[in-house]
Length: 306
Image (cartoon, rainbow, N blue to C red):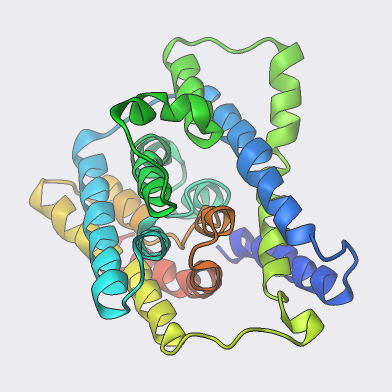
């Protein structure tokens, strides 16, 4: 299991060193973040989904969806009511608490712990086709953009993070693969998404500190990160296990459900926070804390349910 986490730590550390030494200049974090959000991430999602056999287990996936919805709702209320965050910051907090790293970390962990990554197909589809549009709608509204019914219908056309996985899922459902002249460049571009996002995450750790002008951290920010991390690593898998047992999920399916719910926060949370300028520090640190802490929780889950 450790091998699945090492690349994440190494690439984040590389980004930190790069930022400290200013090897890529002062705009590197903004440029890399934009590259990931608008180009590399959509290509990676399209490639992954178009090449994946769609295999959904309704009771287990329903339990996972419930755990995600409840956890994100709790985090949203925590940030909005207790921490007095605005709607956009609360949305990022909810994403940090409930949006799991189902791709670059989920797949190797699933292969290591479960022996296959079949259940992750449904998790990935649910997150990118259901959760992501809701998050983007809330972030759009917090940014003061006028919202009309037509904006919802055209959201996939305007946002590649939604359009790309939707097209990928359609290709998988139709058993159609794009020709190599199109698929190969997309796969090559998508391969840059995870390492670039992690390097950008590392770069963000040095923001402000390089020039000695880091802004003071908001009061209670560490507590907020700790609470969001606890929701992610403890509350979400417990809810998933409880709902799974209630609807009759057992054995290997229950293990897969709880392992997926216990995965750490996806770096997409930081990518979105960076893109919309909302709660960047909270998203960044929750990604780091949950990625470090997930090894322990996943090991315990494996021992209890494996």
